[in-house]
Length: 231
Image (cartoon, rainbow, N blue to C red; front, side):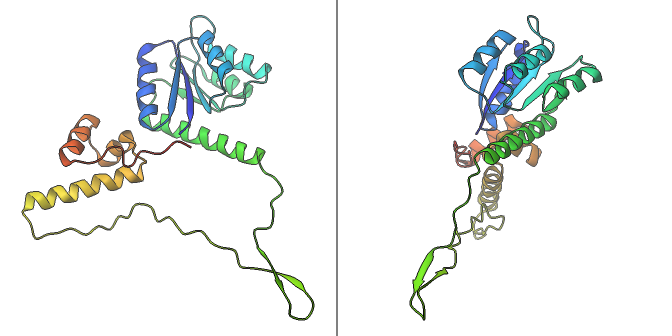
């Protein structure tokens, strides 16, 4: 789960991005202009920012420059616009923007940009926190000849196999019950694979989200079962 700041003066776009990203398990804060974005950035550094270019008070590129000059551009910023030129996108990238999304933004491009931005941020944090590693081998004292230190074999953690695609079903029952059992296992598997994201499950299974919600409730699927836990 990440903290994402969405900055856009259009209410419809803010609401849509909030719904999608919240459904992905992220904490989302909304700002309709540069002033609210500054206040949000001052309160806490988000893990990623989605920043509209054309806004009434201060445009997104100007705000990006402001953050960069003040040393506050320490998180990935994805610029968004439906009217910007290629030169504007290049300028934003030179200033420090991570990516540029052209409106109307497709679900696939949005999720890909967010995923890549958060992955880069995680890698940056990991690199910043690297310390000289201590030996992962336990030292064992032996008394064969001279006393010496012999490294013991490392203890390997148990592998997490994750959700399994192979299921077993009781076929000695009515067709309707057997079909419902299969469908329930099918959707539970995909919910687990997609960390509880209804958006991704709908995309994977080819169902509209409203139809998917209705189907899961009908089958008695626990919608919170696959939801990712907070880090």
